[in-house]
Image 1: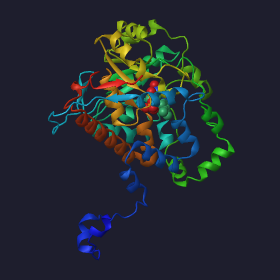
Image 2: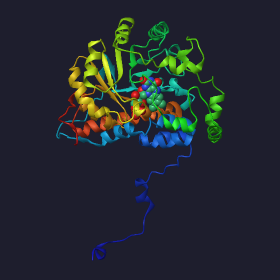
Image 3: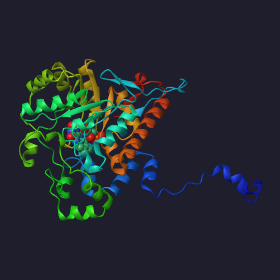
Image 4: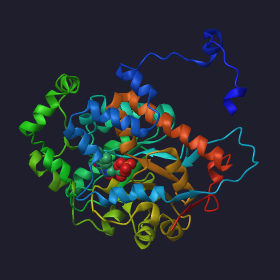
Amino acid sequence: MGERHVRRQVPRWSELRPLVRVEVPAWRRRARVRRAASIADLRSLARRHTPRAAFDYVDGAAEGELSHARSRAAFARVEFRPRVLRDVSDVDTGTTLLGRPAALPLVLAPTGFTRMMHHEGEHAVAAAAAATGVPYTLSTMGTVAPEELAGSGERWFQLYLWRDRAATKDLVARAAAAGFRALMLTVDTPVSGSRLRDVRDGLTIPPNLTLRTLVDMGRHPSWWWHLLSTPPLRFASLDSTDGALADLVDRVFDPSITLADLAWLRDVWTGPLIVKGVLDAADARTVVDAGADAVVVSNHGGRQLDRVATPLEVLPAVVEAVGGRAEVYLDGGVLDGADVVAAVGLGARACLVGRAYLYGLMAGGQDGVTRALDILRADVRRTLALLGARTIDQLGPDRVRLRP
Ligand SMILES: Cc1cc2nc3c(=O)[nH]c(=O)nc-3n(C[C@H](O)[C@H](O)[C@H](O)COP(=O)(O)O)c2cc1C
């Protein structure tokens, strides 16, 4: 019997003490945000601190939410092939995006209505991105105007081509004057997707809050207080356009847009041009022929067409079709740094993230976005080291593949 050979002693605190780190329980929200170990932890905090309608607006997707679930499932198919005995004591996660250095192969995606998630809104997200050294993309549907975000950090502007081309041209000029360096045209929204959670929650554009939504908001007094004590939520970029809010969707989403409009925009905008929402290799080739400097392989976070192709699965074909003539980015379901590394290994120059930073924002404003970015950065660094790669350039199909 092994027990006979065991010597026992009275437990001594002096021996135990070096092994124990007494941590005060994280009662306070800030402490909880700082201790979040993953984006999933931030999502749990976000759910607790944000009214259901706002949380669902971020968390939800279109129709049966299959596109979004499949984006996540594709990342579960990733298989890494590490190489050993490579000195990885000094891992460099940096890259260049459209000719400028970035600390990570990561871009914060454009998301509309950001001040609804947390009153610090786009300011918090842009500041956290600048501090981390990655680009931030302001949405046409943003709740602060481009001029309000003028400042440090690499900023890109996302455009929905409006029916009113003169107003579109004005908006693009405003973005350029405010220091936004690249323009990202979103092309997967000829019409709006059907987000059933928003319909059930009574969240529509224009906002149409049901009694149930209001009661739910009452359970989050701090969120409610901040909403009421800060300027009203508005689509800040749309101020210069006339017309009632009811016409908004009609004006923002133009179902008649074609390649000729892309050519028009290429003339209007002289800086780097990105086309977001491509899922087909031939389309990717066409938009690059029309002058795009980058394409985003994206299903809009599963928020547009449900059961659409999965970005990670079509990525290699798009990369091949583009053939190095433009940068290729990927988004949809990226929730940790290993996802980013996997996408880069399969040919993406960088990933965009939407929900990952919005969960952080809802969990704790700028601190929460910073925490989300810290988590992603640590993941990328660790995954590179474990793969035996010192730099982003060393990632390729030999290190990453998709299991059948
Ligand atoms: C709440 C929310 C709002 C969004 N608003 C926009 C938008 O205004 N313009 C746009 O091009 N994409 C928008 N997107 C899509 C994102 O830019 C991005 O494609 C998507 O979030 C990537 O998937 P992920 O959230 O799983 O990272 C939005 C996404 C979310 C979650």
